[in-house]
Image 1 (cartoon, rainbow, N blue to C red):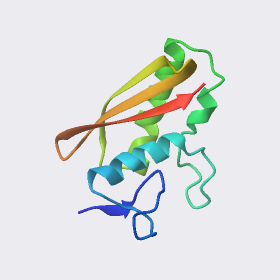
Image 2 (image 1 turned 135 degrees about the vertical axis):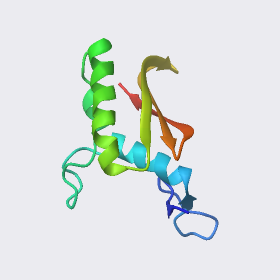
Image 3 (image 1 turned 90 degrees about the vertical axis):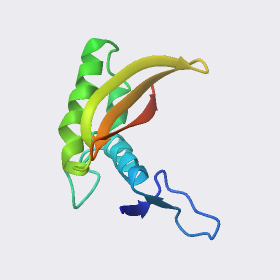
Image 4 (image 1 turned 180 degrees about the vertical axis):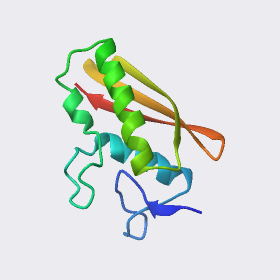
Length: 121
């Protein structure tokens, strides 16, 4: 069993950090890798993709391929238990705001999962 702290961070009913287990920990790690800027973790300077750097990039297939490449390149080092199957990058409008929605499809022990992250533009 994998145990960790829930991400995004929140408190449970006792006031302590909310726990997360198994697939939730791995999904949270994938989100953390995507959102963490490279160089921001002192002990792991190469960790993270820094999703916010994509905010000012031109839309289109190049942006989608770049995000796909970065996720496939960085996730194995930060979360080796997840085997990336596919990455879907969509540019959508939510409540009148442009958003890049990234869905990562992966397997853990042969079982399929996915996690979705939305980054405002």
